[in-house]
Length: 250
Image (cartoon, rainbow, N blue to C red; front, side):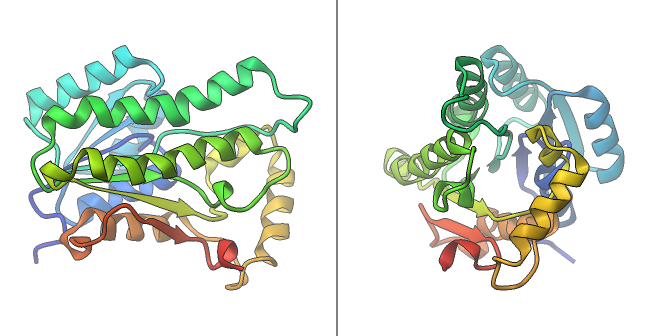
């Protein structure tokens, strides 16, 4: 039985864990061949084993432009083109106003804004007419979060990219959409500087504010990304798709 992405070549940055890994798995299940990136080779190796087939891992950091060049050289050599990009790599750390450092600002914007921008820009020569680009934004750009202003600002930039790039790419009929996950516990949560207990406390405190009464899963986000990547969304362009249980809508 053919899938929604049969014959497509896809890239998932930050595909070694969490939402990226779940999306890479969904892409392969729907018939795509997937390239994944990540900074840690051990995690990439584990992800490739978990995905099982039709996947190539290229180690690299999206905030390093030389790594991005090496990634697309590998994709061009192995497959020749890309049909789908899920620009997912990024992250953030807790820092309240008054404690924000230049290092914190640069690290967050370099990964979430600079890295995403140049990932998409450097991919353009490999994208055919009608390709689909999905940018991972966040409900954090819409709903205020204590001590998370720098991360939230990066995700607002990501949302703005989608609106503008559909105009830059309209002659090529390339669609660009943003997906905004809500509270979705992933390994990245422990990178916020929180202990496992603090993460669980945060998750529990957020669940009661979500109309569905629970947090989400990486696979629930992945299924929405598949929709935006596939022809099912052929007339969907420039949107922000909230996958958050209704949290940002109230």
